[in-house]
Image 1 (cartoon, protein in one colour):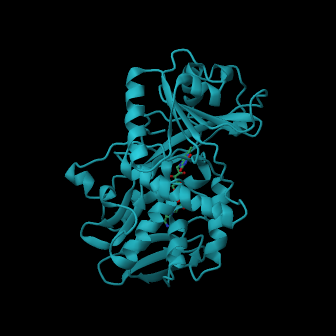
Image 2: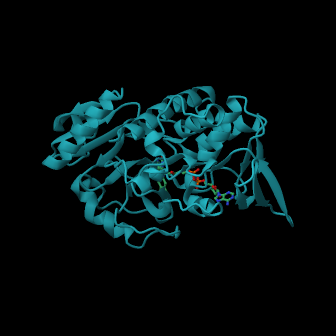
Image 3: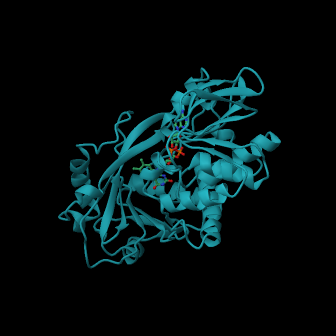
Length: 376
Ligand SMILES: Cc1cc2nc3c(=O)[nH]c(=O)nc-3n(C[C@H](O)[C@H](O)[C@H](O)COP(=O)(O)OP(=O)(O)OC[C@H]3O[C@@H](n4cnc5c(N)ncnc54)[C@H](O)[C@@H]3O)c2cc1C
């Protein structure tokens, strides 16, 4: 998603000689294929809010231009809490979102229940809702972008793996291994690392230690559950971190355990369903007895950084090696903003629309981290 989106943006600007190198046989088969498809502007840092707002606007346009191929359903995100601390955090996020131009609404408990009557209302204190948030089909949005990129001059090298990068000379050189024997050598003025959960390995090819690690995240789908609307907002219980949405005739349930360690295993975490069982009853007791659809459970990798923000921009000492990595659970919803920022950077030496200063790689060495508290 991140690489494809950047190739699309560069081609749209008329930049020539763009090559997209993808290890797998088609675009969108990495972490992107595992995403839940949530799109939200309800974050707690300016960077994340601005990246979402920009991308939402562009996804609305892509939806219109491609006859709905991305499957963008703007049913909103509904966040709620039953704790004093949760309410204070929600209020802070709400105020910043309003300041950034997000048309988010503050809801009383009754207003939360009016939008989601199936939520357990006992002790509920407050909620927020943003109607331009929603859900997208990750495969649909990749297809829509790929159709557009295929019609441009971008060279698409699928089944090709970058195995070596030498940034010392200008242009830099990359060694790429294809499906056939031997390797090919490419020369590039700019190299962009958009390798998702493998970003650390790709950076290491240039001797760069990137603080970006893959972390397994799991989702579960229930058997059909009748008696509820076919479309509901993404409902987020901030007190447990459990979120639900409709998936076919059942529900999809997600939860990210903040204590999970980095790793590359993408089999379903054997603890996941019991972690859900402990938490689901807090606000969604109607799902406590729902059957879990075994083949509807899956896991994938979040490309995570220590402060849950992406790294977007150049490498200290290697100014033509750019990174667009570490998007965690936000890679779809921040993809077009990140692409716009780097397309600008390549052409003008700066990002003109979005501020990528807070996302610079140096922040880790400087200890100047930006902390997102609405990590889902
Ligand atoms: C369970 C789950 C739920 C999620 N839910 C959401 C959500 O609701 N909303 C949201 O916005 N995001 C969500 N995400 C996060 C989102 O999926 C990721 O942030 C996003 O897909 C990252 O995109 P990417 O292009 O960086 O990574 P990827 O899609 O993994 O793409 C990176 C590509 O780089 C290629 N590559 C790696 N190394 C090399 C190499 N050496 N040479 C050539 N190619 C290479 C890989 O083959 C891969 O295809 C979710 C993720 C998971 C796992």
